[in-house]
Amino acid sequence: MNQPVLRVVTIDGPAGAGKSSVARSLAGRLGWRLLDTGAMYRAVTWAALRDHTDLTCDEALGTLAERVSVRLANGSVYLDGEDVTGRIRSVEVTRASRYLADNPRVRARLVRWQRDFADDHEVVAEGRDQGTVVFPHAFCKFFLTASLAARGERRFAEFQARGEAIDYETVLGDLERRDRHDEARAIAPMRPAADAIVVDSTGLSLDEVVNQIERSVRLRLDALMSPQPAVGR
Ligand code: C5P
Image (cartoon, rainbow, N blue to C red; front, side, top):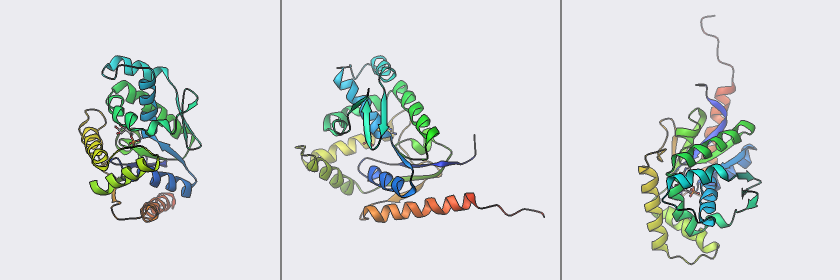
């Protein structure tokens, strides 16, 4: 299918750029559902840690992803029916997530879930590969970024709010390493889709970013929905 998919907006970008908050707010304003694909990778990572799966064994990780079930509902993440929303945000899960994100079988499984989710709903999909791999025909794509310092401060504040003892330099180091890894990955590397609008959130409030993105989405929706003038009549 090469037609633009009217029901999917994608927001990709590096860690800490504010994707989750922006995507959640945008989804609320449009009355659409949020597809938080990072939460899916995190949930499967949590399952691997829970089951003491060897993170360096591709075969074991692939089998695990095909055995467990991940469900997003009402802003929560469920692994095999258990609510793991809080647990998947830990430093441990964050660091281990790259093993699952690098695994082709894990990615194939999660891509299927993500497309199934969008079959039933109008979605704002956020992650690293939503505009490039999962929904290449989405009608409106964004790549949300920010300076390393701004992203580090945002992530540090999130860890502090959750009471996790971690210093700012460690957060910054983890963030840089994770971004480098996400960009260099052989499969579905993080990069803006050729037709994505790049938005830099450095120094902008959440509302300012969402206003900017919502304006572009509505303009594009209007343009695609309005009748085309007849040619040659
Ligand atoms: O966005 P979040 O920080 O929750 O993502 C956790 C990890 O999952 C990322 O560092 C990335 O490696 C992986 N991920 C991915 N593809 C996505 C979403 C997340 O590889 N679409």
